[in-house]
Length: 244
Image: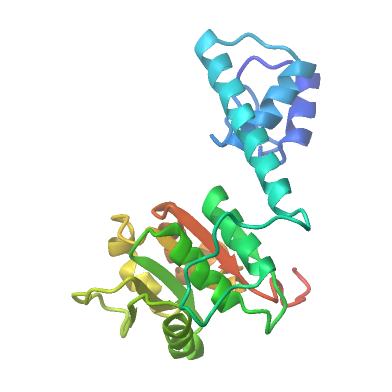
């Protein structure tokens, strides 16, 4: 977007806060359905010239956003039930609230699960991997939880699990799920960058709160960018530090 009048540019920056306040002249946007929906609304208030192809794409992505939002709201209704229950082990099943999270993650391709401690986020994560059916998957956990995650995945599903042993890459055995520790994912970015892990789950995702200022944050971004489905799970998204 370019040649925007000053008063329109001020409004544009307030609607799209990711635009740097010092930006002038040319404005760039993330290519996503939600941004297209907001941009389409903005252009209804401040009409601008665009090519017919750009208009068709903007309209198409807005419809895509509206459709996905309607589906999302339907899943959250109290009487919603999945068409088929997630295929866990015969003597195990997900609760209704877990089925909703599983459905949303598979449909929307991304989700942040903020259930309280003890609510079964491990089961939700396992269900997402099973329902998605995209393997192998990667689960990234705090160091002391790697074995626990492996045991719980095996308890609730028939997925084959391997716990990553080191930061240095090695030939991986065949498995459906690879469990990483936040302390060793940086060494595996070249593998993740090839799109090997189709689903990635981050348990206690607040570990990535420093973003690109930490190696695990940089590595996490590589895993996310090359996965089809990305999920974060935590009961404590922040630690209540002053800067949070």
